[in-house]
Image (cartoon, rainbow, N blue to C red):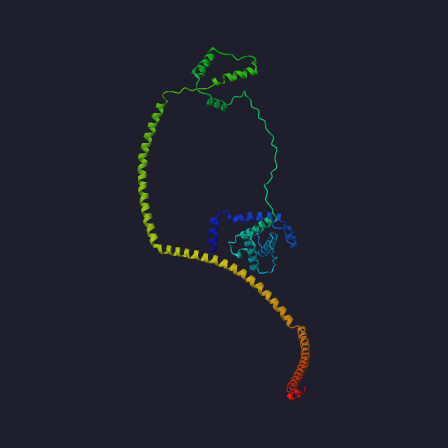
Length: 414
């Protein structure tokens, strides 16, 4: 089912989609060179990447473990270059947690993640190239790098001078002049081929002897060119048409018509027979098609139900893959919280086994007991002072009472 699904996706995207990752990988390598990724490679004692290092192909050697580790190193470095803090993963870290952290950072940059995280665990493929290319673009944006138009070197082409001879008369030039000039010449200005042929034959009859010496022209070149320009419009060949040509064409048309009618009679019979055979065959095919449809109707319904179930299963799978990614992220957060709690418990356990706090408690108890004794003494002193004050106050009250009970006789004496 997975092979059919993958084949269907390739058909939708086109035949060249399987080779798109090679183009993306070459662009990624150029961007990494602009970001000086050689320093990271030298820091980890690794060789520089090849043109198609992260592109998966059955015709190329692959090492998934090494490629995945290289992917995590370059991805973490690109995230740091893009301005977001990201801890560099180690070789023995959990690959699921590492991939989920990288995808979280990619979503933070606005990248689209419409594929399961397990695609990145192979360390190669179009999804790996896409993630690294997207992170490289963010790093270049952080450094404010812009692509400029290429500057091509200018080549000085030697100008070739074409010398044209005005005196040369070509057939194409004559035809152009014939089409451009109006056809209003009189018949006297044109050359009559029949008269020219008769004059040539008369000269041959009269006899002409070959000259004994070589002929030499004494005509001036300029005068010759002027004469050529003057006579050029008259050098037109005209062929007089015969008035009986249309009759010949009419006779040919009648002959062709008779041939077409005779051929049509023969072909019409064959075509009628062929039409009857085709109609019978179409009726047989139609009846057979109806029979097959009736026989396979339940299979068609089963196929449609299977297709609907397949679409539902695909939707559930997509939803489940999204939930797995979210749960993986939550699991990583819970793991970090658990590690922090374990560390706090270890610190508290180590502090509980230490004897220094017990000694401090004993010293505090001793000091507290001493302070209690001192407080008891002070309380006793205060109670004694209060008792003396009460007794003194009582004696004073008694004395005052006796002083108020003086006899009246004694008052009168005074």
